[in-house]
Length: 42
Image (cartoon, rainbow, N blue to C red; front, side):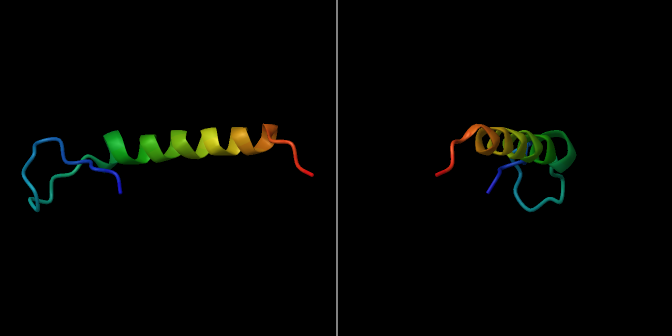
């Protein structure tokens, strides 16, 4: 779970998915992919 509520008010339908959530998950996915590409396989 990624916490993307900047204003601290829960359940107000104001979340920062585009500014915080999606960029974080995109970068995480890229780093996992790069690590898997470098990993030696048996």
